[in-house]
Image (cartoon, rainbow over all chains, first blue to last red; front, side, top):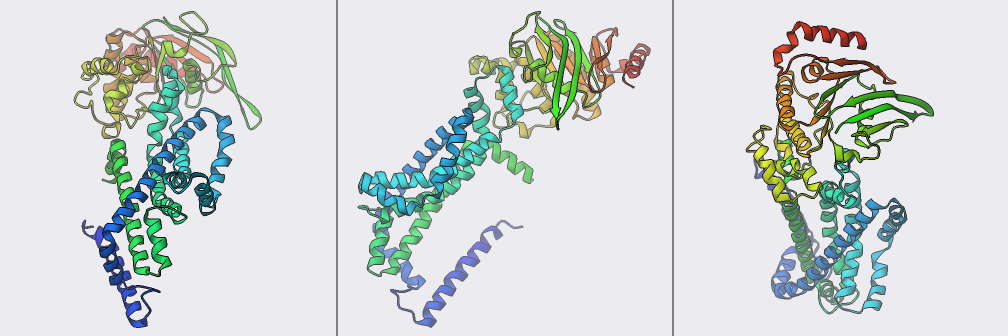
Length: 256
Length: 248
């Protein structure tokens, strides 16, 4: 298959979607405050770009800080779960429970407790991202080849040495799949946190725009949010390539 | 420094039934000796192997290292399982120094030591390759290098050449004899290939089908150094016949 075709298909679909949208708006004569046309969204995006960039910074900061916090927490929990079956049995239900809590209901509480600053948003993001990262890490570590663990054990390696040399590296591919999911959640979590109250951020921008029925600006903000999420996603993929060159070499060989 | 197995027994509970795997196996591996263990597949070789490594506990009998009980298996034995178990995320060089690193040796020093031995193991030029980039024979050699470099007095090799084609296999067997002569470690070699055991060993233990007992203990009095042609020598065939009688 020629290389260009990889991008042709998605491009065709996006262009078709925009065309249908534009056609719908033109022929139905729907008001712009109900559904703006694509070109109106594009114009809003162009006008608002400096302001959107400014708000993106707060959102990105909250998303990345929360994501990093979630990763460190998840690593710590994964190590503890790996070294103590008792801890694992105790914490696992809580882990699952944490994922079932509707974030939209807990965010206002965080605002009451921690104010309008960065912290409550970081906590929302961390809560959303913690579960996929922790679960993928724990499962990855469990999937490490038991024979490799035994090999190290006979050599006289300590538990920590075994975690460092076998379990962590073995868990990396699974960890990065979890991190990719968490990365796309992270920006969403930050925006939800900002909806409920903040000085700046894409969530604030969106709330203000939708309150004044400037839907073209809402859509412009959605485009920026998607772009920021995509950026994070690409960063995570690059990080994965840096962290596990062996894995990508193996994969490209098996594809040959 | 050697290993003595004294009447080692082991059984498992399978579906509520007692399955005796090892029924009193006694054997001895002296310092610097090449000893092989032959037995039909599924006879409990791997169980015995795990007991010597300290990965499983015998129900009865003892494993003595250097005549003593309670010595950690890892201090005396370094083992090579059937799978090469190279860590895919480590370069070849960092794979072969694994045991040295676990022992607390400085990584750079261990790497220097390993680099000098690369050509002896036919791996020169592949120091920075990942295991997935190597051929099956090279991976086996790398796994063996890791086992030898652990610098333990006894090497435990579990059918190390089982997955290789016949030609590569013979080449590897002869090369293993060189390595053995060079490093002077005792080798306990598990196999189900009679020719392989005879070509390599000074003594051979033959196990019965499960439950495993020693059916035959045979001194291999073929002269050393040995070459591939030895498999056609009359004495070789005589010994092979003795082993086959014990097995079938």
